[in-house]
Amino acid sequence: MHMNVVQQAIINLFPGTDETRLNGETQLKDIILWDSMNAINLVMEIENLSGCSELPLKYSETVTISEIVEVVRSKGGKI
Amino acid sequence: MSMFSQILATASYVPERVIKNGDLKQFPPASIPLIHSKTGVLERRYAAEDQCTSDLATEAARLCLERAKLKPEDLDGIILATSSPDQPVPATCSTVQANLDAGRAFAMDINAVCTGAIYALRVADAMIRASQARRILVLAAEVYSRILNPNDFSTCPYFGDGAGAVLLEGAEQASRPHVKDGILRSDGRGADLIRIPAGGSRLPFARLSDARQQYFQMNGKAVFEFAIAKGVEVIEELCRVNSLSKEQVRHVVLHQANVNILINIAKQTGLPMERLVVNLDRYGNTAAASPLIGFDELSQGDPARNLKGNCLIVAFGGGLTWGGILITVP
Image (tube, rainbow over all chains, first blue to last red; front, top):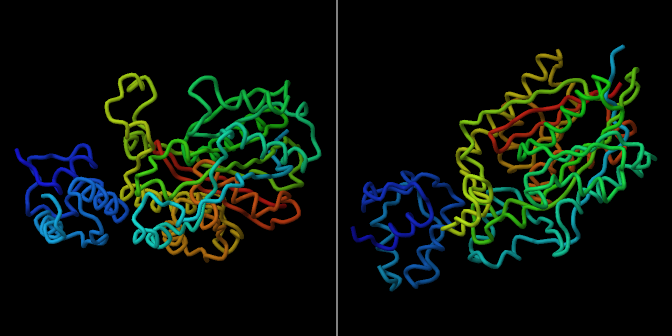
């Protein structure tokens, strides 16, 4: 299964995440271990994988993976 | 004849090196204000390169003995609560005993993570009440700066290093502040919520495949809810069993996990915030050490002089474990 950088970042950060249930519609609140502190870890991991910096740090828990992918794309990051 | 564990002195020690939130340069600058708003922590102390847990414990122990005007050879036992020991074997308390030259004292570690000091106080109190020992020095010391993943924003900003001490002595008359009651609880089904996966027999370092497994990990959301529920439960139970109204509880030393946990516990128990010790803005979460550092700040080394009425010391942490001690000042 090809994963985008956001999916890969989630897999890297949160062991135990079921890859098969991660899709574009998955919301941040659906991720095991998701909380406002881990949100920063996720942004740092996405920046690391995508090569783009200064991504927004705050996301609503209902934001989807697809929406974050679009943010990374708009910043010129590798998807 | 009933015995009481009276408190002769308290002490604490924090390393000199101050790490402010802004010093955590590994995190994005825009994330730094979140540390205070989400945790209440402004700064924490980190041990010097040549300091380890036994060194911090020894500093607190020496000050406690000095305040009690006792010598190391006057001790029958030393119990050290820690979840960041010098090494897996032997117990860190053995090194403290040697540092102090307390040759008569037994020495043992207790690991109940952030509840460790409560467990240590309860065990010491039970031994004194059973006349198995007369004077026991209870210590709690942590150097979490060595077990944290420096790049994990969900754990690193919370914690700091430090040590606390309480010296208990058996007495037939309760003429000084003494341990009136206590509660210890555990639920091992939550063991995975707070852990360091590697370094033991389950996952030796030699088999490590993911470097992050050598570091402290925490399920922040679940722990937040657990801490509030159990903090409230312990306070209510100690009050109920000892027929204390909330007005009769003059001081509350809660484990300094997160200021939002403290606020929620105060709100749910009806205890005014001004009766709570709050020092995590200066020290962060010092795990097992935090209740004893807080108790020492409250009693300024001498509970007989500086405490009045009833004081609850309550903690919750990995294991899962939770518990509380009721100190009464005659």
